[in-house]
Length: 306
Ligand SMILES: Nc1nc2c(ncn2[C@@H]2O[C@H](COP(=O)(O)OP(=O)(O)OP(=O)(O)O)[C@@H](O)[C@H]2O)c(=O)[nH]1
Image (cartoon, rainbow, N blue to C red; front, side):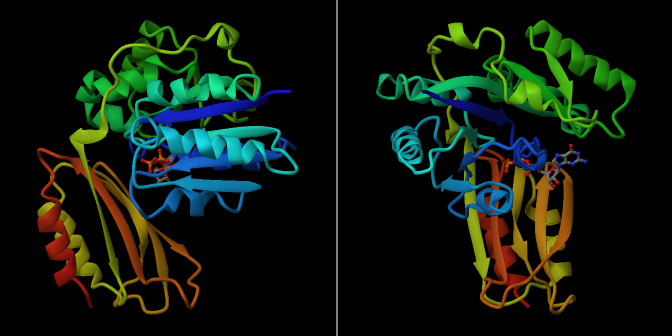
């Protein structure tokens, strides 16, 4: 019997990991394996999903829509060979990935009869689109929506009626059914069921949108950072930065560790439990290659070491 696969796609920071965590916590009762492709060498998403899933495998340092296609195929076979075999596989694409390359791999003849691509869901960040209306013309953002079966809209709080209506129009024009992630209950049935038309799905053709437009850098420190200098570094060198995440400790807040998340202009720090062998700071940044001065940011972070 073939194992159903759910592919979760969506732009950088759209809310894919959060949605998968909520889905896994929703009491589905199935044995689910998650395959997570993070955009940097530090696989933070796998850590964030580890508590909720039976099995989490991280694929990092590349994109499963292009350079890591072979790794995805091998990982799928590995997961399918496990005992007990998972009853479902959820794949989280990186926010820089074109879903076409991933669909191509899942539909590879080597996996025929082994997996069934049940649904492709695209997470859309309503607040990001309201703040950055040109996102709707981004070829990657469009490909992620176009090659999905339905759209899950999140981060709707504070989004005006006009911006929301525009987003609904974009989804309608693309012919995508829309679910609101804040409207409980979570559309588990839709995410874990056969999307209409999935049985007739064909391997997508045409050129993919490639991740070379982005630059990704990692930064680690064995000592706490100065919070003020960290914020100043981001203010001074955050131009073109689309997404950042990781764990950080700060000299001003001894004994505390934070999960740092930045999406566009919005940053937040969530306190997390600190383990004695944790690296104090482990961060990853991704930005537009032609705008993001990554080296300047890394130099400023070096100067922010406490
Ligand atoms: N307010 C609000 N915040 C959200 C929602 N979903 C995600 N977030 C926040 O948005 C940030 C990014 O969420 P993730 O779930 O990591 O996004 P992602 O799409 O997995 O990100 P990458 O794949 O790493 O680019 C985090 O700070 C989340 O807490 C939502 O529905 N509402």
